[in-house]
Amino acid sequence: MSWTWFHKLGSPKWFFQFASRWSLCVFLGGVTLLVVGIIWGLGFAPEDYQQGNSFRIIYIHVPAAILAQSCYLGLGIAGFVFLVWQMKMAPIFIKSVAPLGALAALIALLSGAIWGKPTWGTWWVWDARLTSVLVLFLLYMGVMAIQNSLDDKVLADKAVSVICVVGLINLPIIKYSVEWWNTLHQPATFKLTEKPAMPIEMWLPLLVSSIGLYLFIAGLAMIRMQTEILNRERRSNWVKNEVLNRGI
Image 1: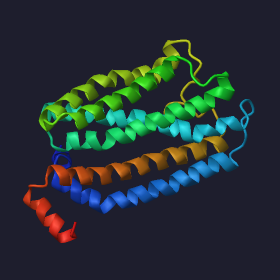
Image 2: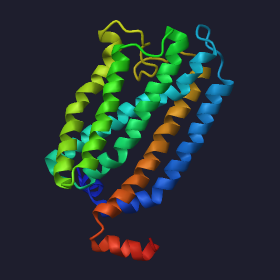
Image 3: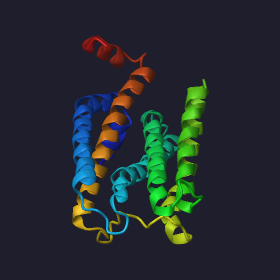
């Protein structure tokens, strides 16, 4: 098995060139699917027989909640890669994606609170799922605080990598909290091993908006990573040539 792809991903130059070609396409594709999915869900999906129209916030809440966890999983993997192989792209990925994951977690918390008011009769309860997502948001904030406060970039990269790896323990707590404890939060909407519990007319726009949000964030992440690469590799000859060629 060839590991060429793995070493390429660790090269700032290779990734910068790759992202330059694909970031805008991925971003625009994500925007398109996200708009279609949200309009489809908010305007055309059938009303829920129990929750009425209040359930429609699911088309914002669920994609954001899933994405927040996926982003942190990516941070944890990147942190492990940096601690083991010292690849330059790992801390670049962490610094670029952490704010996006934090935003997704914040949207999940706020939209969940808005959804909880008509459903549970309260904006917030110290439910296991809600509390663990709040911890996820605080982990993101901690990662960003350390990266932006430490002048020693090597020390900052090592510190946030450790936090990202250790924080992975929170992800299974988020996922299985509704099964391990008696919570108000409903079970998972998406399950790879089971048929969706909701009708396809409700499920399809949710799938479209989720894919759209993933692509949207992926495009933003690639754009942010290009900026971070230029900042970190600014003394490299290839960056100087890139700046001259593009007139940046």
